[in-house]
Length: 461
Image 1 (tube, one colour):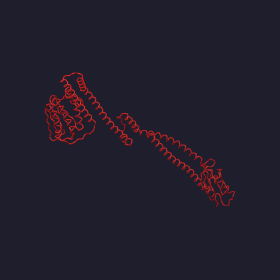
Image 2 (cartoon, helix red, strand yellow):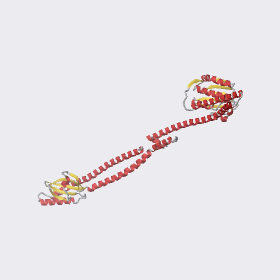
Image 3 (cartoon, one colour):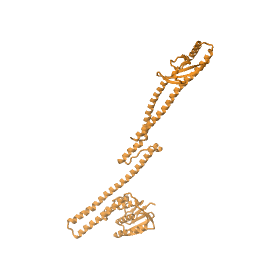
Image 4 (cartoon, helix red, strand yellow):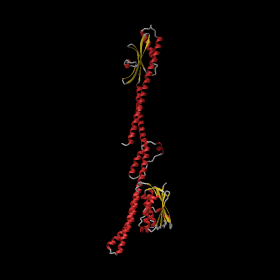
């Protein structure tokens, strides 16, 4: 059973029980009040009758009267007082066991059952009976009042019926209100369920809409909805990051496949030539040399690709405090070998600068940048350090301004023919930019065609 149904049933049950209990207590109190009011009125009426009757009899009756006269006077006076009542009560006048007057048709002693006053059911009617005594000429007389309360109890029965009808309507209205209020209050949970299902189907941008009123209330449901939205933000961000990495890898692998087609075709072609054709020794050496050169190119290409893919996994690198002099000493042998191969010069300058860096990765960047400089025709390269920056400057052919923003893209090459001849695949600057990013730094390129290029690694303060 859903929580909305359970809560609705619980609220309906509680409200119905509370309504019935309060109504029952109120109805019970009203019933007692009505009955007590009639009984008190009858008792007061009996007391007034007793006083008036005793006073009137005392004035007209004397001790010398005969029993017949006395009886006649008592009946006459009693009847004259009881005939004037508008309450509908009936009366009885008795002396010991002798009944002087009875206009009720009931035996009052039977109704009272030995009590001073009593309410009983007699022959289907509700009757109230009460008795009081009065002394007249040294004799005690009993005066009874009998009032039919059937109409009062009928009114109570009608009141109960009205209460039942009102309760039924109240329960119906409260049920509707509870269902509406519960449904509206728990609507964010329904939305939460819907959006959670949408997320399982890949709709990671879904969120639970929250009104200003809900945000101000800050109840538990709003808190859960906000937590869900924060979770959805985190999930979407993670999914976007994973998707971006996957897209980047697909792009890199696709580009690598494209780049590998040319050297592989050439290697296969020369291999088939060596296998099927009779070549001279010089031609064979040239073919083997070409195959070796293209194989080395493939090896460099795949190594750079693997390094670039590894660096896109989003893992943090371990940085250590190291001086520029230490970095340059570690890279110098490799860089001078490259300079010698290109018959060019190389210079290092620094002034005690220090950086938080991974030495192996930074040396890899410097190697790529220096190799690019010589490939661009540079005859002199300077590797220098300044405050929060390591720079590689050359006097090569330079880079056109319109493509500077593109050269860090994978497999982009400003001069495709020269890059292919030199074995460059267009991944060096992409790799350098990624390594700089992992160092919380950025790659900044300044270049002028015919003058040279300066590539700087700018570290954050």
